[in-house]
Amino acid sequence: MVSRALFAASLSLALVACEDPPKPDATPTATVTATATAAPTSEAPAPPPPKPLDVAGLQKALKCGGAGHGPCEILADFQECEDWNPVTASGDGRWLGKAAVVSKGAFLDDVVLLRTRRVPLSEVGAGQLPAKIGLTNIPEDRVTERRQAEKAIRAYDRGDVPRPSNQVIDYIKSRSDWPEAFSMKAEANQIHVAVDGGMYLCQKSNQRLLVVKLSANRESPSDGIYAQLHPVSW
Image (cartoon, rainbow, N blue to C red; front, side, top):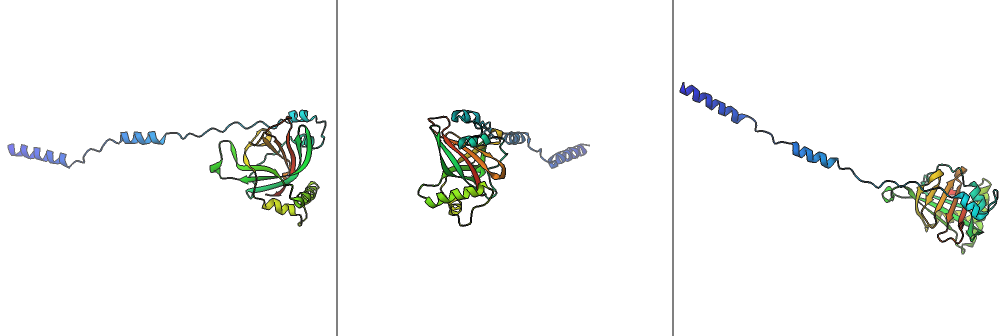
């Protein structure tokens, strides 16, 4: 009897020894992992879109009556803008047009150029579009280009294209120095560029652009550049 009891006890101990050791509690590790995974990533919220150009206020400052001419003509057409993406197919779009440069309420005619350039999304801030936009003119010493720009603009105005020999087209396409700033979608399908007193773009039919760029230091509320431009390359 004693021998059988000892044998049973030995067998019981052997069975216990052969069982798998208890697994460690995985709950703390799972809790830490879940907590780390659930941590939200913080991104700056996009600001509200800028207000559209104050067309009525500028018309009042310029004493515009009806369609008018010069800046008043641009303002009269600066409504019902088409929805427009300034990032062109090539990533580098260029426009040419005639402008009225207003100073102290009076204006002079000039020729202006505009460029939209695609930029990497890594450079774009909250609410900004992946495009930098710049408006400039042709230097006074570029006499031939300035003269031929007038001919090119007249061709665009009548729905035609400039002659292949027109040197201003090559000048616009090859120009590398452009002032530029980031753009944002504004209300009323306009594009706003944070430069000087603010620049506003309005696309019309046939890729025609209307541009109003207000001066940084305005002696009159209407001081700035009022332009209509045609696409040269996009």
